[in-house]
Length: 204
Image 1 (cartoon, one colour):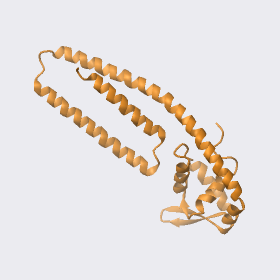
Image 2 (cartoon, one colour):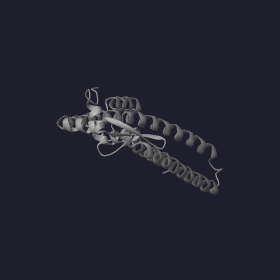
Image 3 (cartoon, rainbow, N blue to C red):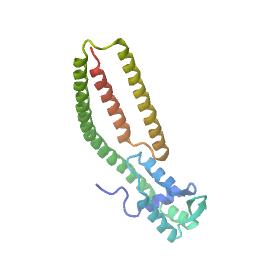
Image 4 (cartoon, one colour):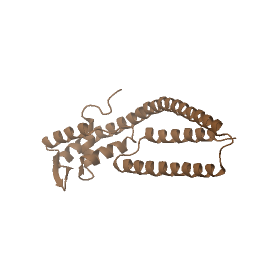
């Protein structure tokens, strides 16, 4: 796959991000991830060495902000940015092309992953139905009406616990990084398949 940034383009884009004000490393990573619509998120190992190089060149400076280190653009950095505005416009165009390419690749990966996931879920659901049928055959004539009430309450509790637990995890993740299209599509596919499997297990 072609690189996301051409040689020297990321360092220029970091200067552009810092033009609006000081930022720490995580804020820069998040800003880049949002610019790419979640299709790409640079690692700390990609960002910090380039920030260090920019600092060595006098284009950015660091300042402490509690336990974090903020990076701000210097006058020399702003002069460099202004001198390369035309090049920055080209970087923006390259980013747009990269987003489209990454999105296409991501869609292909999602389709392949979802096919495998649906097959796994269908196999699991079929195994569960077979087990349930076998249990029903053994209990013919012995089930009490109260058993259905208990099982309904247990099913509702399981659904509520699943919803609450996953909601907390998703919100926690979203507070750190934007949810990716893969995560969203996985949630949608799993829930759709679960709904189908559960309905199919219900007696007619």
